[in-house]
Length: 208
Length: 208
Image 1 (tube, rainbow over the protein chains, first blue to last red):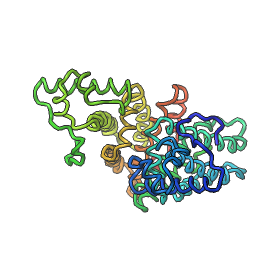
Image 2: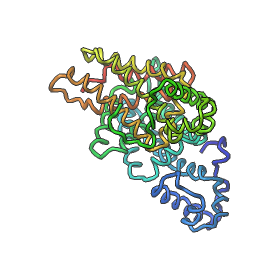
Image 3: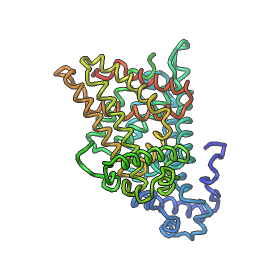
Image 4: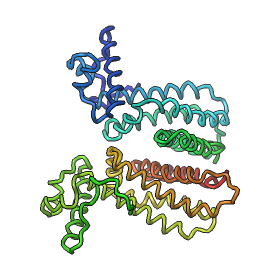
């Protein structure tokens, strides 16, 4: 997605071209999800991963230099899903009222998309403990903020005093925090949390 | 603070009674702050900690069973400071308007208290990666939420439909997230972030 490559050690080492290679990478990713869902990120071993995926260990290392690179690949899947979803939903927005309503909807969509994903939370937590992975997360939030600001800014009155950049960044950042908090609660409490967060957005996103 | 002891492995093993023992624990905590400020939590070694504190390694283990227990002690310092500060500030509140204004002030106080503390962020991040430490953090937020709700509830109209518990929990939880986000920015950007967050609180905390 980004042209820069600031995370060499976490980069996919080769892009699969041939059919067999593509299938192997798919098998590795699927096995990684299963192993992390079972035992968390810290228990993920490269040898176990190769065995579970049914690929030679050398083949695994052709793709990933280390475990954190596997975590990165899973992390990228999540952030790309969020960014492409946001682009699809917000690109046709024509009024601020519509934008604000869609931001409320996005909170629910984010929650329902990842609530039943057994690796979303473990991968997100693991990303916090690795500085390179942390940067991927900050970059993701910055891209999402930039994309939304580009869409919303032309809709604001020209003399608007709203600090759109900061406000949208906080929406992006805190919606992630709220949704992750809701995920560890039962359904009823989760609903209360999401509703309160949506309430705090309503009627306030674009007002001075 | 709590009567339960859910975190045996992270508990302080003995409470220092004698003067020499108290001094040793102080020296250990001071040395831990210095070492974490220099190299982060992951680089903290029990042997280095004993050496830096000038105490025998056996004496260190009399207090702390493992590194995570040292991290817990530092984490407790932070949360106790927040809780006692909140108790002091909010205990005399008599109106909801006053409460809301003080919540805005509390955002700034939290930031200025910990911005220059070189171990606040590393300890907080380390706590996320240990399930027992994570629970300490959730417990802290629950205590703070409970304390504030006890103070605010009598001030609400009897027929209020406000989900006070969820709203205050989100304030506590998200203020932490906002302040930690502001801490990694320069002063000007940090100010924008805190101001936007305070704006979103203003006039909305206790309204339906």
